[in-house]
Image 1: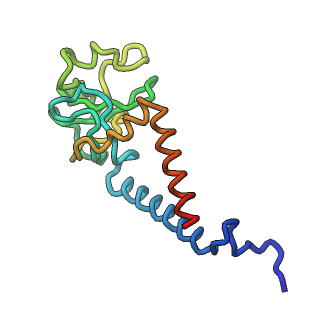
Image 2: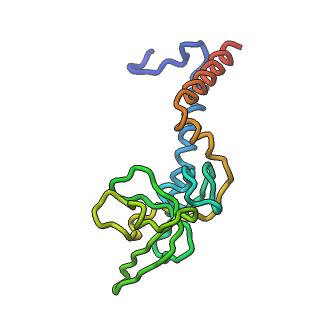
Image 3: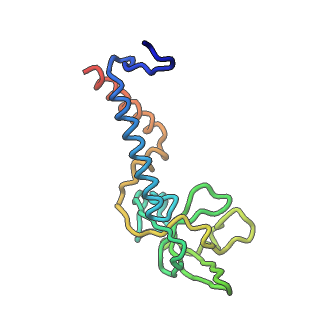
Length: 181
C-alpha cells in the first residue's frame, strides 16, 4: 500500500530522486568541511578576501587569507590580524604595531595598514566613541597564509552587481541546457 506523506521518487524533469539526494549530500559535506575548518582554526571566518589596499605590499586587494584564532596564543607586534569592531560591518586586515599589556593579562593593541600613513587611531577605527585600541575579542583571525588574487571574483561581484546577475544567468542557462541534453 501507499504510505501517507511519502516523497515522490521522480522529480518534475523526470530524473530520479537520487540526483537530488547527491546534491543534498554535497551541500552537507560542504557545510561539514566549513564547520571543521572553524574548529580546526579557532576562527569563525577561516578565510577572508582582502578588500582594500591598506596592507600592500604584504597583501593585495583580492588575496584570499587563511586565518587562525587560537585564544591562548598571545598577540604579537608585527603579525597581521583581521579584526571587526563595533559599528563596522566589514572586518579590516592590518598589522599589529604595538601591544600594551596591563595587569591581569588585559592586553590591548594598536594596528596600522602597511600602506597607510597613520595608525588606526587616526583612521576612525570604529564608530564607538573613544575606541583607539583593539582587544582580543575584536580579532576574527590572524593571517597564516594566502593565495594571491583568488578573491577577485568576490570583489568584482560586489563592485559590479550587474556582473553577478549576468554570471548567475549564464550558470542558470548552463544548468537548463545540461538537463535537456
